[in-house]
Every structure is written in C-alpha cells, then in structure tokens.
Length: 338
Image 1 (tube, rainbow, N blue to C red):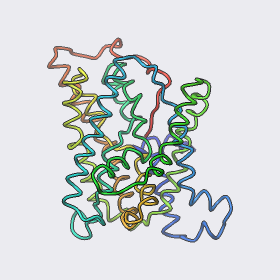
Image 2: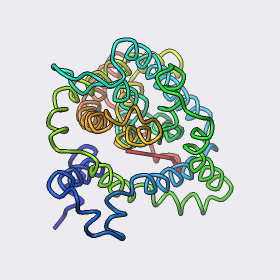
Image 3: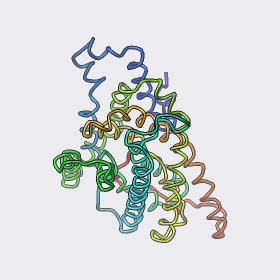
C-alpha cells in the first residue's frame, strides 16, 4: 500500500489527514486516551511536548549564512506577512467579540482564528512553487520563514494589539526551544542536519494530537467560514506581499503571491495560545478547524494563482518560457514548514 503517496496528493495532507483521524478518535471514542493510558495516552494528548520538540528542530534548520539576495527576499516577505497579520488583528479585534461569532454565516470566526491563519506562511509550498515558477534565489527565500513557526509571532501580534496579555516568562518559554535549536544548528552543521531530519516526521504526530481536541461537528460547522477565511488570507495578505515583492525585493510579484498561504503547522497555534490565555479556550476548537480549512484552501489555490501570475509577468517582460538557468538546487540547509 502506498499510503504516503496518497497522503502527499492532498494539500497539507501530512498534517490534515492525521488531524482528521485524531478528530475521529475524539468524536467516537473520547475516552480512548485515559482508557489505554501510558504511551497511547501520551500520543493522543501530547500536543505541547511534541510541538516543543518540533519547534526546537525547526530552529536548528535555519542557516543565516545565505546570500544577500535570499535574505533580502526572505526578510521582505516575512516582515510584510507579519505586518499584514498585525493590521488584520487590529481591525478584527475592533469588530469581533473576544469569544468569536456565535451565529450566522461566519459562526466560529474569531480574532484568534484570523491571526493564526494569516501570520504563518506555508514555507514548503512556497519553496515548491517558486522552484517551478521563480529563480533559485526566490525559491530559497523561505530561509527565514521558519521564524514564523510556533506561537511566538501570534503571541506578539495578539499582545501588541491588546487582545491578550502574555507575561514575559511566557514569551521566553514559547521561543526558548526555537532559540536553542537555532543556536546549536548554526554552531554545528552536523547537528542542523540531524535535527532537521526530524521536522517533517513530527508533523503527523502533533497533527493527530491536535485532532484529538476537535469534535467532527466543529469541522463540519467551520466548512464555509473556513473556506472564506482561506480566501481572505490569499486576498488580504497576497496583495501587500505582491507589492512588497515588486517594489522592495525587486521581483515580479510571483514570490509574494506564493507566500500568501496558511501553514499546516499554524493549526497548532490556537491550541497552544489557548493553554496560555484561558479566555481563548472556548474558541480553540473552532479556530483550529478554521485554520486547518484555510490551510487546505490556500494550498489548493496559491500554486494555481502563482502559475497564472508568473506566466503573465513573463509574457509582459517578453519572456516566452522559463529556462533551466532561472532556477537550480535550493540553498541548503533551509528551514521549511508545511
């Protein structure tokens, strides 16, 4: 059976399939973890420790010894995405109740869902798309995008907008594994390679654990709002990213559009933040489901939109086809996340 190949055909499948399986366990056998106890219970309920290890390994993959062009492009996209998410959070916090919308078409939508869906780019998707439609420098520009990984950026945005207050120790606790991994990875390339190999294999494990906190009814209810949220991510973050890529990073806008996605790993952030801020806990299940839906929607649409944009940009520039010299192997090692 070629299960891995089947999962890979689903956008964000390595994260979303285990999450759905976990949701099935929670919905049909909610007491399974306590019943079996021991390691099985740890696998079902171990979201935080699994994510801590993943976050550490993600930090280790970042190598700042990249070319100036790569860092310029990566930094431009990173800062723009964060600023847009910050502005979106400010606007949402003034319009939405802290416990989210309860009824109507947008039921389940909350500030937490909006922030966590917009502040984290699917780096793996970006790299794959730009490897096909951009230059090797643009493909390698996701080198800094791993900084978005984990709850830190979401915490900073929510704290800066006054939506939530995080004690300094919580900020330190959230970023410390990442910093330690980053430090070790840059001190020794062998450690970077060792820990980097763990990043992708850990994704289905924390996806399954996250799913065990979601009722399938919540996923069904979040369908339409989640799709609308995904479309909103592309439009709201995509336009500024395209402009930043063209006028700051010197690109044709394709890299900016390719970065207008929601990372699969962002699905974990509502749960982590809910553990730190109790008043967010009631909206965590809906926010998690909506972010997962937004991840799927953006993973489906962003490559198509980027391909169309890239083709038109090249035609406008008088280039008929992309040549082999336009791209090449990605700079290694790089930090990627789904």
